[in-house]
Image (cartoon, rainbow, N blue to C red; front, side):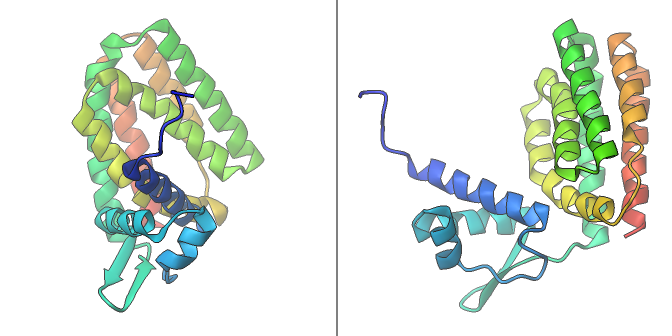
Length: 215
């Protein structure tokens, strides 16, 4: 039984953080909702300590706001803040694309095409969760292959703020035209066309800015 070891405190904090973040981004915990460590600890089957640590991280990420000795609550979706986050994340994706295109393998291209197929199917089916997951999987290939850890961390840090607004807009019937843009991005990547891939990436993020302006 040597392979079974105690679960570390950091891992518990990460588990709590991931679960609470997902609930906030999905809208299960709505903007403005008060969150209590004792309630979420019970729901997650954890002690209060890792949940408190998760709260601190989510405050830093902008998904929670806290007033000491008073409350911790989910932040509202503020278009200007989402726009700022999108500008940063878009720049990181463009940076990743510039480096990754010439490093992509046929397997990487196949992974991106498969993700785009799932994305398109999910959009048609109205499955927002599956669409956003597939979108992440497609773009994550480029971030991973670029090898830029700072870019990867920045994308992970700010994407949840953007996803909250995207989910709300799509849930309200907003259109998503990214499948065709994804196809153009993948074609440029497969052709080794760095400039073309960067242009399409910028176009994708301009489309997101238009989505934000509709909020």
